[in-house]
Image (cartoon, rainbow, N blue to C red; front, side, top):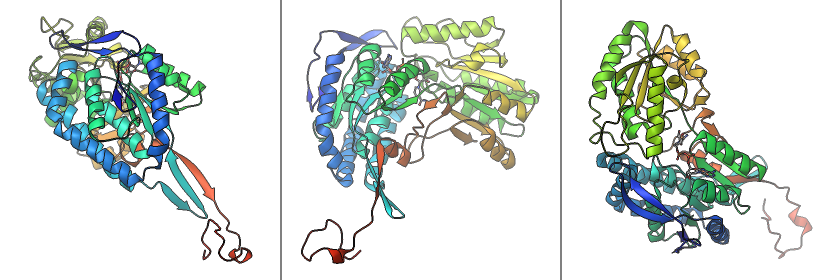
Length: 482
Ligand code: NAD
């Protein structure tokens, strides 16, 4: 574990075995840290906090830029590590899992320098100061990206961080810690404790030395963490699940809309919180859309273009959803619950047609390569169906009608909307985050919002006394010529 700027063993002897989901081979072991290790890491972070918080933003920016450069230089190794523990095909690991975090780290290097840490409003000044020590708990679906998307803005804001990464993908987290070290961040500013969620994760969420908990993962775990953190009066952000949809209006370029939609779900084997796992098509072009989707699915050959899901538990979960879909009367067009390969945690990419809104597969997050195509008679029916979901992550509309696109943007209950494009491209400076049960704590990541979340405001209102009242030569601590 990386604590206080050095690698050290865990206090206990337990380890976590890391398995390659593509072939079920063991690829490594990491320490399973406990509450004592979390405590060590939090103490290291607290000790480092004052120095890092007082470091000028431009200098913090330079360190984050150095981190970006190390990540960029080690992209091949990162891609191979992600492939080894997540099972994603190497081209995807290179283009997304390794390259995206470099871009995001780069955006925070710039934002650290440009963010307005001090603002003047009337006769007041608002100081945006670092909130303190951040406990970051990340999932496995985008192993490095999820880490960078929390750690980089926290560092930019001047916070110190303790990371507890997902137990399925800790090797990528170790690589990140090496990169932090190589980039020359001061000891204790970033700390890594690998371990089990209910042990190390819970200890981090509860720790009294943690000021903010930033969590991404399942709704069930998030709700628990939210309760624990709130009870301890910590700021908390929960990025949770989704059940996003792609609405294809009459007149839209159907082939493009379907192909982009299928690619959106298949990317990362469906393990994306904002994936458009429901496709809504009007009755007239419904069968054409299903046929186009089936043709698009043929491109996603397991073991070639599409990887496995992360572990045996997820595979069982996704397969049981597919079985449920069949049981509840959805039409199986492609795929099914049977394993497509003898080895590895593969799931057959599965296309369901004739899905109705009441079906489980239409409502719950499956987190696997499963697409449901629903028939809707009117635009209003489609929007009502989507807004009925407890989730409100990303959504999309494909249309040639500008008025309809505008109306959709205003009427849809979701944090992100793509119009004729996959949403969002999380590189750069806009924010990312859902509504309703997809997000708690209004933490939109990326951009200024990302940095802002890790700060707390202090309003300083000043009325200077008359300098004439003070004798010359006395340091008043404020300008005499105000
Ligand atoms: P998970 O909730 O099981 O685990 C996420 C993290 O929480 C892991 O690091 C885990 O060790 C830790 N954890 C587990 N139990 C804990 C506890 N009791 N206390 C503290 N920490 C604990 O989720 P997962 O299966 O790893 O990830 C899949 C889920 O994440 C999906 O539902 C998906 O939608 C969601 N997700 C959401 C977003 C988003 O941006 N909204 C992004 C990615 C993933």
